[in-house]
Length: 126
Image: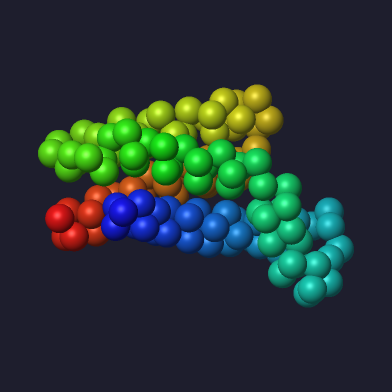
């Protein structure tokens, strides 16, 4: 169960990265005239409400693949986590291509980075 609890690294990491990306888009977009409250809160609305499908699918996939690959046997942890990562990012790569939204690329890159830190945490707890 400790392994599933390490998913907080991925969730918080992606949440922060996507929020900062959305915030920068709002700040530096000359076509929009937003006040401070809109600049700060519109990324939260984007991430939590519009991104609800993203988060639901992401968390569900994390738990499923952790249970299938990692929880029972932690041998070859690095290979299993790389496989898990590539399987989980597949729908988001599709969305990146179809919708041409770079926010998915930010989430994918951040997921790769947070998986690296998560692997260290899992290895430390074994």
